[in-house]
Length: 117
Length: 109
Image 1 (cartoon, rainbow over the protein chains, first blue to last red):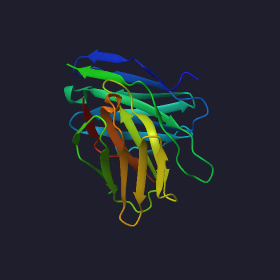
Image 2 (image 1 turned 90 degrees about the vertical axis):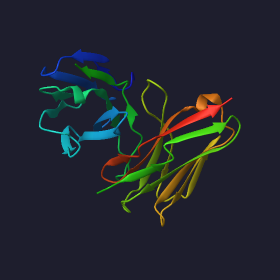
Image 3 (image 1 turned 30 degrees about the horizontal axis):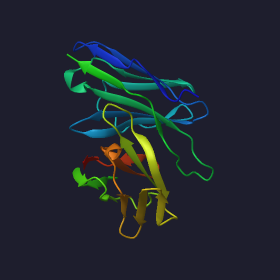
Image 4 (image 1 turned 180 degrees about the horizontal axis):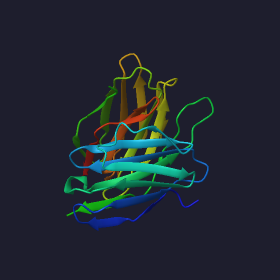
């Protein structure tokens, strides 16, 4: 397995533009997580899905952010319109849940470094 | 709300010495406690984890301890080496995972 795949790896855009980040989780994993990492705020969980259904989006900063998971092998995180303060590294991670409901290791993708000018 | 506090934020130790990073969590229902290592410019990667039914776990030079009563857990790295230099994150999970703020560990030669 190639691991969690994210694209693009780097994105530079201008304020006001729409940005779409993409993620392909590890095959067979039923949990998918989107994180944002900045020096100031550390690693923040934005939203996570279970079996393609959003479970908790309380970390999504504002309505400008939206995430979808149309099928088990693909998810997007969209920012519209983008602002300079959205500049960060965005990580996608996936995991499978052990029998009995216990959590298991999250595998992170390589991240997308977003710069909004 | 759920919270994980991590200390210290930075740690510098002499090569060969031990390093200890401590975390506390607020949600007593937390049952899984992973530790991630993130090298500069790379993704976080799991180095060790512990579940709430275990008090201690060891893997070579790395060990984690858990005190459920006090809601504390710690990472211990012995015989530190230059390649241990990185940012380390603790986390606690119940229905979702909460990460600590990270510890930047530097190993002095």
